Each structure stands twice: as C-alpha cells, then as structure tokens.
Length: 342
Length: 98
Image (cartoon, rainbow over all chains, first blue to last red):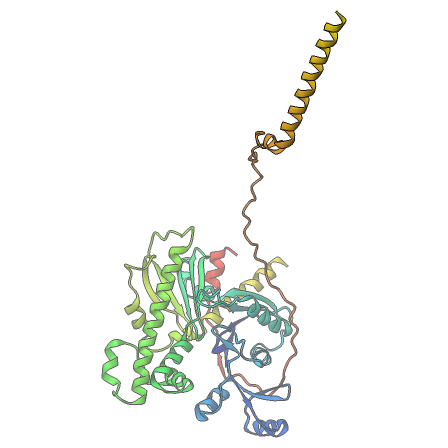
C-alpha cells in the first residue's frame, strides 16, 4: 500500500488510502533513574523512547507537559524545516516517530516523503536532511521517493489548473513556494520563517512563553485574524488579547515577507515562464489553519506589484494534511506505474 | 732604395702599433658603453591559449548513514483519522497520460 509522509517541523503526518496519522514532532527528556521512570510512564500510558540510558516522552504528551510545567524544556528534532543541529537526540526520536507512523513495509510498498526547497535566507543545505530521512524510511523496508513540499501542495491544489500556478506550503519551520507551469517547477525556494517564527516574535513581545503562545494559536476559540471580527471580541489589556493582537500582526509580517521574496526571486530567474492567463495561488500547511488567514493574505497581496497575474487565492481543503496527501498521490502513481510495467 | 724601403716599412709598423695601442685603450675603458648602445630585443606578445571559465560542478551528497533504532516502548500515534483519504491521484494520472 502506497504511503505519503509529510516530514514537518511541528508534525509528522502519514496518509494512506484509508487513514491519516499525525504525530507531534516534539519530545521531552525525563531525568531520573531509568527503570523507575519507565515504570512510571508505562503505568500512565505515556509514550516514550529509550536511547543511551535516556528516556524521552514523545509527541502530544511532551507538548502537554511543556504547557503545564513551564520549567520543562520542549525539544524539537527539527528546526526551521530541517534536522535540528542543536538537538543531539533528534535522530532516535525521529526514527521512533517514523517507525510508529509507517510501520514495517509489507511487500513492495512505496513511501513518498517530502523535503523543503533550498532556503534563500539560511545557510543550510537540504541534502543531509534528505539522506537521513531516506535512511530511516528504508530501514522499515520501503522503496523511497522524495518530492519537494510545495510540489506536493501543487499536486493537491493545482490539478484543476493543469498544474499551473503558485503553490505555497505554510509550515511551522518554513514556508515553501513553487511556481509551477504545466507540471514543471519553474521556481522553488523556501524561507526559514513560519509558524514558529510567529510564536517566537509574539513570545518576545508579550512576555508569554513560546509554548503557551503556540497553544493559544492552535486552540484559542476567539482567535480570528479577520479584521472585522478583531475589534469586537478581544478584550483589551488581558494577556490573551495581547497575544492575539501580536499574532495577527506577525502573520501579516510573515505573509508580506513571503510575497516580497517571491517577487524578488521571480524577477531574478532566467527563462521566466509566461503566464498568459491568470493563475491561482494555492496554500496548504498547518500555519494557514488559523481562522481568518486568507483575510490577512489578501490584505498583504498587491496584484500591481506581483509579477504573475493571479486569478484567485485558495486555501486547500484540510490544509494540514495537504502535503501528506500530495505525497500519497505520487506514491500511488509510482506503484501503479510499476504494476503496469511488470 | 733599400733605405727608403726600410723607412716606409718602419713608418707603417709605427702607424700600425700606435693604432693598435689607441684602439686597445679606448675599448678597455668603455667596454660596457658599447654593449649598452646595442638595440634591446623587445618582448614579443604571444597570444596564449585563453582558459575557459569553468563553473563549479555540483554533486549529489549521498552518504551511507548508519543509524541504530531506538528502544521504543508503547509509542502511540497522537491522532488517527480513519476513512477514505481524498487525493487528486486520478486527475494527476490523466494529466500525465499514464
């Protein structure tokens, strides 16, 4: 059975034809005597990973712990879309997460996973990240293929437009962009800013911990970036209202940064494809899930400054799983192609 | 007749010797001056084969990464959404002409 894997900074998501599985990509290292800690965690049904006499709580439980105990440091195996160089225990945790999500391959199964495009604002290469993920997935017996994250978004959102348009994946660590023309990628790049950048900036400006900001952003029922709703529901002066106002402000800054860099990159490439008809911008990814996101995007978008005529700006249905589903489509086509050949 | 011959002969010898001494003295004193006045050979410009500007070649970095699996205990997926997953596979397939 073909599988698609979205290797995100904040979530790892797998898609198969009959289910979607999500795992938060975070962990906490628990101090204390190993046997005792293991016994305690098992008793409470808390998932953990053991490596080199260290116990790590993995996934949503780790995230929840970090909300409750402000002293507990939530660790991230990935940072800015790539493997976290500061995190020594990242690989065994990632290995465990991927193993749990994919399971062992049965027969000749194909797994298509995604990597970010080369960032334009960070001195990082994507090759090591790509190789590590490939090695882990192959350990579980899969035949592996890799595609760019934004291209996976294009496979979900641009099919009705002959795979022509702009695909944007708004992730936690990065935003990935691909300008596609008839299925070919004319331009692709990433910027090392995403949902985490918003959280960090809001945390710095409001004095609220980053974990709490993330939690408010993901679960607040009153958060709506739409301008009209904004003044009616927020009570000025409260901690939450300060956070919500700052979140809106930084979302605007993030979208502006993204669109400006897209324009600059597009103007800088040779053989610019000519788009005779307006094309859509399709957006996916977890950072785009917040209510009112499209309002902020439309507010920042200025057709007169944008190098491509745009017909509409669309948020893909179930934006959080769009990358995983795009990878799944590719994996299914690879398997069908091979079946036809044999 | 013999006397005239001897006189002419001695005169010629004297002229010869004096000329020799004078020339010898002159050249000994200014040996370098003469060589300096020799026309210098100018360097000849040669068209060397021009080096083609070759840009660097990028190579794929494919490492053999060895990785041990961690000892995993009771790890469970945070969220599972069961049901048919909607994809655009059929449209993609049609588009690619598969």
